[in-house]
Length: 288
Image 1: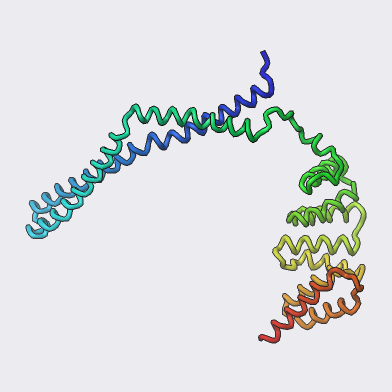
Image 2: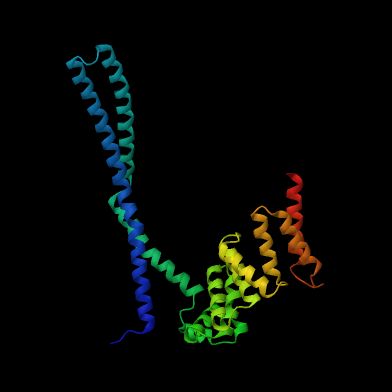
């Protein structure tokens, strides 16, 4: 007889619960024995030390006074270790085998039952399966960003020359912090439809973010090519100024950024960032 999906699910959950119970019970069984063994070992160590002192005295390695002092110290430690060992044994004896069996049984039954109760109350055991494909087959506006990326990636896998898909997913990768993927997506768009100032600047920006804010050689090359195609490309000019400042040419960077502000449209969203950068560089120069 074939098992239904629900039976298979509960069988898997039961198996996982069993594994968890075994892992929980193992340290409980081993803890008392391990502590008792440690106590016995410590007592045996001090007894060996007392015997060694006697042998050293017989061989004339140490004097009688030194032996007596050593015996007092080791005996004191032996008594303390023996008292601690006795306490551990008393504690272990206080937990009878019958009580330990009861605790183990309660743990073995209680953990799975508690998990089942929580699942039946808070879970959805009657909810049908929701394969990935049907969940993605909804209007794009109803999908979270991560699911939308999965949908576009699937489309691009089937149609790798889909320029619109690459240009759509590249800035999304950037927002998600997947900077190398964003640079790769812009590279694919450039291969398909050629280099433009916007694509080159966007790829350079992704490369800067991937390098934790450093304008790498590859990113700088992208910005230089973008500025050659369109001198007004703001990202290219901004990051070229960053590169100049990092190279110690702060005056050139300030001149570039001020020229950007002079030619900036009234509604340019990047103007505050450029002004803040100019102020930071000027303040740094004043403090030197």
